[in-house]
Image (cartoon, rainbow, N blue to C red; front, side, top):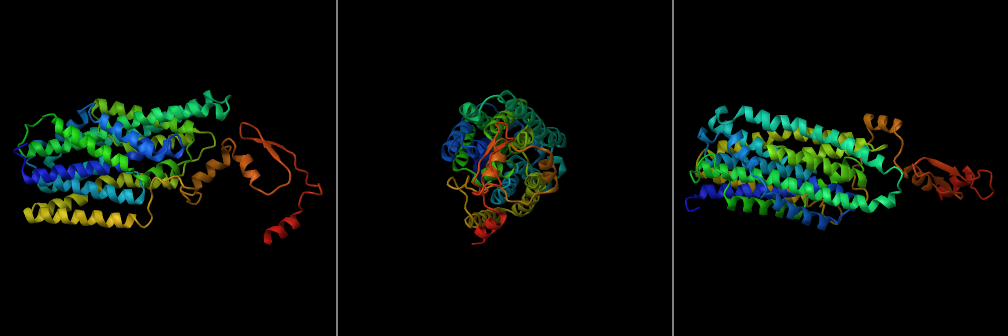
Length: 438
């Protein structure tokens, strides 16, 4: 490490800052459904996720190799300032989407930043186009679809197996299953996302001549990347947790278990073969699949649509910011300093804006936290043909002031209504109107 220059040191610190933002940006991937269903308290959930992210960072280096020697050509002549510019673009996009509460892809922000900065500095020859297509773009499209389809099947199977059991009898089992599957997602997240920062730092060390090309990440890189993402995870990205847990669909414990198990399976499989996919997209696809898979469940498609738009914009948006930063950084030490100052100012402005409506562990599950969007055409159509989820009809009927009683069957259908409209104790419509107007 005695050969690390000041510039490489700045790049390493910036990479760890990105890793930190990746941690709190992506905490929702593992813990949103567990928190929203009450299987774990918010603080306990993020603490468990942080520890398992740290453990996962030590399990594999295949994704780190994809970053350091796959997407960007190590021998194309890129300099550490190019990597610095790419990281700045990724960090700023992460913070913008965090402020908006949108679970966009930190991975694609990183890829977009590195690609944009490399193209501006050394041209298209510095990017391995085949690797981008095979290991980034194709997994980006396929992974959420695969996770969604798998979760639809898992959700329907879960409800079918428990159809003859009362909800209170299965609650404890689903709670344990959610905790176990959330732990698996956290471990999988560490094996995939922490490695991306390892790969960036390794790439910086290679471009600075500190280590040889095609080297594995040094142990100190693995440890520092694991600690950075664990710390970010512990702080919790509460805004995105709210969107994932409440904004896409109303998650019940069986759905949470199915969604997390399906997502973890896809993430671990991709880490094993070196696909640097977006854990955010996988988990979001799984949550949508859980909403579709539950009988009577409805996905808020306009929220999902905003998420997909953010996914599509992430790579080019981070690339454009990084390209501008690279143009400035190429001007020399003054340009690098200017990029650093602008990045700090941008982060400060986003933080100040976030304080206007803070979201934290105390209000992430507050009543009314879910999306209050108007009912769209797709949602209205699904509701018109799908039966309501269990217990909804009875609870809706009991919300009206009555003197009688209504019972509901265990399957959520309307039961026997014992109210007598002709009873003297039952209020007439006129009397009800008089009472309500007072």
